[in-house]
Length: 219
Image (cartoon, rainbow, N blue to C red; front, side, top):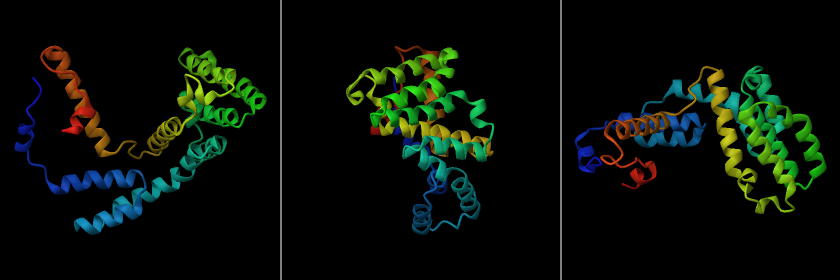
């Protein structure tokens, strides 16, 4: 049986704890104006340490992430190497993903010859690693379609993929600079999912339904 939602009401949550979770999310994403408005509305004291943390994040990540999201992946790589010179060298998955963004831009611009040359020079060396070989094949297959946006792997062309790569880059840079790479709310969600999955394993799937975060958030 799933937990009766009425049981949640017996657990008191302090407003300050909720406010801290919201603040950590706003700081993590550098939403300074929203943070200042939230602090003013809740009457919280000015979180000087949070502001300093956010400025560090902005100085480190803001321009890099904008480049990644706006299609200038090569510039994002250049800037990343300036602030974290060994990060991409030690994280081949992330390096490949960033290069793939540039490849996608060439494909979308119908620069197929240039895209193929770029893939041969920059992407194919990653194919030596088995875990990246399938990803490499997926990207190269885009060249086979006159309208890649209608192909079975069209998702590689979209904003959602770029956002995913940018998020991973953001976390990697923050971790490299010894800053938290996840917000408090993300860690809470991760913990909740792990706990529920562990309950499923301990008690059997028939006793406890598989946990769905989406269904849980619906209430």
